[in-house]
Image 1 (cartoon, rainbow, N blue to C red):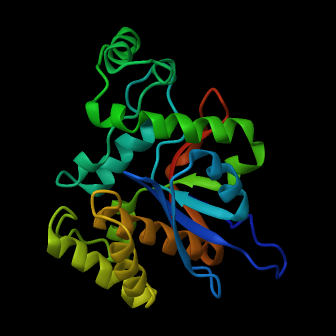
Image 2: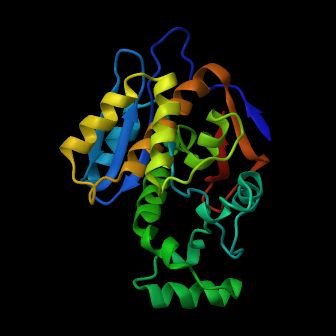
Length: 249
């Protein structure tokens, strides 16, 4: 697994980091940057580019680099192995690039099957609009390709818990345990969790969305001190120059 020195340090200049996860309303952003801690729910897709440009590093739970002909990315295959059998289902194969523009699930399935002999999962199709949006922004903004990085909350929580597996986040005790782990590192996590729940309906921003955005934010912040690691070790790029890799610390 590759180790990448932090490239965004600016000789003492303040560095801003954040974590972003998708939610029903759009996106939830958390930042634990010292003195600028914040949360923000982003409903307008047109706001994303300017928000990306505000930060020196963002960890986002969204597939970025895509395959053209292979059904499963190597980073996803290796991530499933890293997480273990009980958590492998949290990793799904995103659409191949030729299926990204399909206007319907049926047509995306046809395209996927034509190229890979496998159909696109409904889970992958449901977030395809978000994948397509991030893909479009990064392809149009070269500078963001090195600052907006794909990560995976379950891998990060595993690392935060010393490599151990714990209760899944679809259970109350799973959410509680994740929040406790975050609180030990960022005490403001408790306030953020409470305030977001009070401000937004659970149907719009789920509890799992909140803790996922927070663990992404925590490790994006840590990466500026400790550098990055990637799955796989040697990072390949897709046909649009986007990295096919999971980033962590």
